Length: 440
Ligand code: PLP
Image (cartoon, rainbow, N blue to C red; front, top):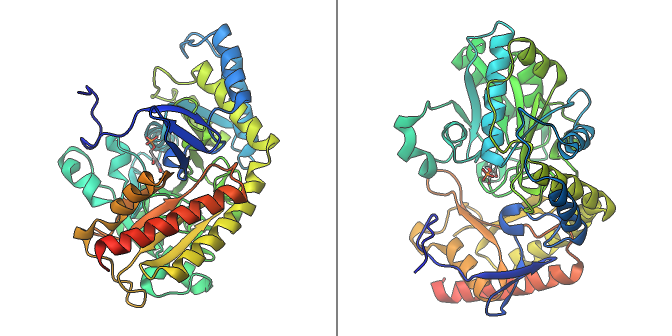
């Protein structure tokens, strides 16, 4: 009997070791990590330079409480992070994961409003579907009813606008009118809420598991940034999943040259070597909060030196191995293979994403975009079949209420063409078996 519990009682094999893109369980079975865990292990498993950097830091110190000490590791990681963010965002605050980072961004935004005499601003607009974390603040801005509904009474519901799912709405994502159409929904919501009450807009620049790698339509991101500016609403980019090279840029915001007020990072930022997250914020925003009495927020493990040393080494490895470029090249190659799978398997209704943040969505009918019947549980069955065949992929059901069942195919950024062949051959076999099993 195991004493552990997670979301379900389903037991998984015991992990023995992991190297590069592969993982082995204690019985010696090998798995290709086709989802980098949960889009975390961007530089692959057991990178020797990161392990060395962690060993060196462990021999110096593993903990220094933030009210007593800074460490070289945290100073260095803050400087490296700021250098990778847009100009004027030189202030970095560390936490231990994505939800903590989102909470920190929300509280920094609120304290900034108070510090500059805009205390009436407290509403955070976000999108449906979206995922921003599992703590109550992050959950209040998460647009996914199955996760949020049980806790509705315990948190303050925040306004949501629809995510720009042009493919479901029958609109052309390359037509600038489509981007303008969805961005206008933000402006309408700000006006409906009362512009003086709106604090921030939080958005995943390219959707993560919530939308299944939704790339915004042309012009959308610049338009929402302009709208935020016009109404004095802070723009918070949740790059927890898109950051650290995943989409073929170090930050996804680079695709559109955005200058947000706060960027939220975790997952690939320390690539699974240690729990780590961060927010980077505009200098003047942080200065106003500090001048206003200080940031009333902070976690015990913030800026942990071991985590920061690992974070520095991960950023160095991303640069040394050219992983941002590899995410572009291998992303294009994987996308072509997924398009070929779609041509062979009518059950796939859409393939989307950018860099190595890629996904495909199941549909009963490509023309009507009708979802598969929920009871089939097709996404989970595919994940289970692929797992049995030695390939790990990640799935989400979002059709309950909002979108379809999709499968994220997001291997570590170190993948080669050979790995891509292995991923797509296994997926091909798994899809064939799924269709047989479901008698579709
Ligand atoms: N934000 C986004 C976009 C995410 O994808 C996630 C996790 O999947 C989170 C926030 C929450 O991160 P964590 O699970 O580390 O708390």
